[in-house]
Image 1 (cartoon, rainbow, N blue to C red):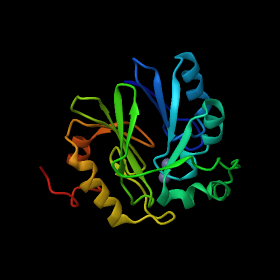
Image 2 (image 1 turned 30 degrees about the vertical axis):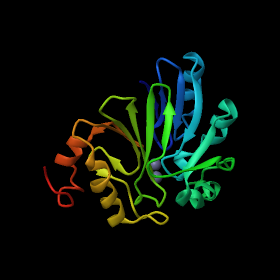
Image 3 (image 1 turned 180 degrees about the vertical axis):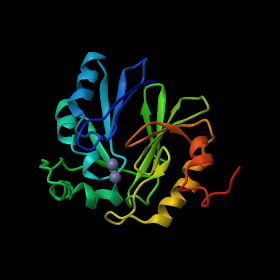
Image 4 (image 1 turned 45 degrees about the vertical axis):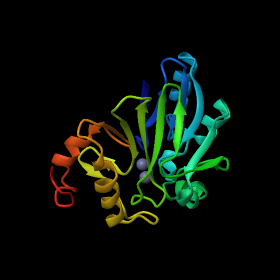
Length: 218
Ligand SMILES: [Zn+2]
Ligand SMILES: [Zn+2]
């Protein structure tokens, strides 16, 4: 699997380019202000971005959708429950004093369990509401092999969890998503959050202070 990660000011939100090393098919997860850096990688490595996936509708995760779609022509997919956020991206930007051009209408909606082929890999959509109602994670598996890599947006961070005080966030729902959906993955599963460094399910299960009392220990 080819994996390129970039984060730039002001939000230091991770944008991820995931691609199959055999077919050069690529997916761009959460295009934000790093979009030109990621598009440069796409050109250098001659990757073909097939789809633009959003973990959720907060503006730091979609500020680069316009540029990414214009450069690649790829379809933009978001969970329907975050459409209200996607459509209010400009207003969200204004709250932070940030001028954003409105993103194009999404080309489709992500649903729990949906499989997105990516060359020799498969991405599976996991609905993990709480940080936002339509928050999703992406489980990337090599076809026919065990083990997953998770892209979790702002649901789970290394040593922390997503905030739930923003538009329609909900704390019990977030904890249920993490313990019910993400913690069902084995300890060695590598996790790439929307901000900050990567971690593993095992490390968060054992040490995340927000989840110590919330989850049965194994
Ligand atoms: Zn967010
Ligand atoms: Zn974020």
